[in-house]
Amino acid sequence: MNKIEHIGIAVKDLDVSNNLYTQLLGILPYKMEVVESERVNTSFFKTGPNKIELLQATDENSAIAKFIAKRGEGVHHIAFAVDDIVAEMNRLRDKGFILLNEKPKKGADNKLVAFVHPKSSNGVLIELCQEIDNKD
Ligand code: ZN
Image 1 (cartoon, rainbow, N blue to C red):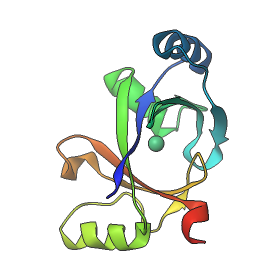
Image 2: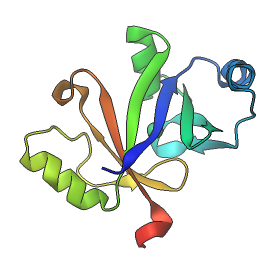
Image 3: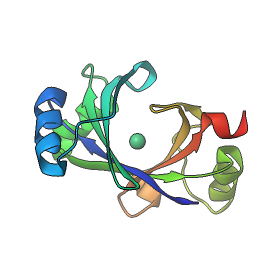
């Protein structure tokens, strides 16, 4: 894995949290995007080389809605950039990690993504992401 690509934070109200993080970081989000497959509205902030993703559920069946119902707002996942997501998924599967996806899927911010179950990574949901333009 190359680096931490971003940290995902589950929020109840994206507008409220966009304002909050704009004040906190002193910058505006550089991107807002609805990800239908994940049932989330997202926004991204960039501080230096680092990114923060805010995620708000678009409906009650979203994983973000369930996460907030159970644990409240807060850090939801850590995403790592990888060059070859399929190879990385196979490597982790071989080592006994539980993957939440059979295959990579299209995520926010022009990425292919896949998730590692928090059960296999000390309670932390891990996202693998590969920039789509890199390889295709
Ligand atoms: Zn993410």
